Image (cartoon, rainbow, N blue to C red; front, side, top):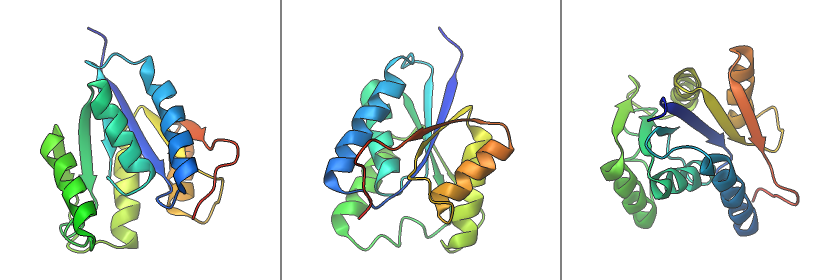
Length: 160
């Protein structure tokens, strides 16, 4: 059995349908070569890139680690279908870690991104290059801490 490979995800949540499909293909290619028994995918389960990644990790047979930025993070999801989807991910996760913030917000999201980067050997970033975004901040933090970062932004990709 290979050593554990811990892969984190950061990425934009507002991907249009065609971009989501292209991102799914690109993430599949990056994860396909990894032994499912050794793959650990770390995510905060935000909509968009995080959930696409979670689907792929689980479909590939890897383990899912969820980082909840705050105690109320999943309770604040207004859409019942989105809530049910997150409940399913949480039920299938190998572990769930909730950071010590009572309420979700910028500080909790920043702390969660840093924790995720620190936990990961490789960071996959579904990122359009915008510096002033949570994804941009996570990439900058990862690079400053000498983590391997792979940026995924397929040709023609768009945010909504």
